[in-house]
Length: 116
Image (cartoon, rainbow, N blue to C red):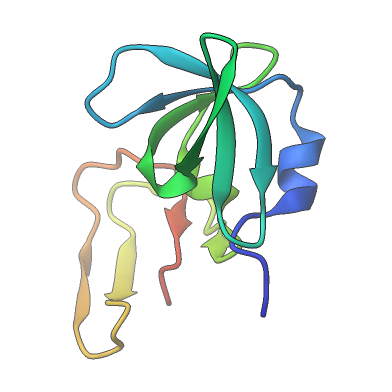
């Protein structure tokens, strides 16, 4: 079984990490990641609490650069810049729903798990 998170990517970023969870304004220090399962331990007032990485909305590295949590996943595919007018294709995770069209308002620079 492969790892859920990209260990080499995580280790290449400046540490320590802080994360913000869905529905929370607070930033929490990350103690460690378990890349196989996606579990992580955060520091909550000096005690460690286990959370799952899927709950993370934003990640800041040691240089205070904000990262999209999707880039931490092993199935991340860097498709390069998304520009207006480009043709795109997406296949849903179940492989049954396909969408094609033009990019009208480019907002994201990369995709996660999108088949071209």
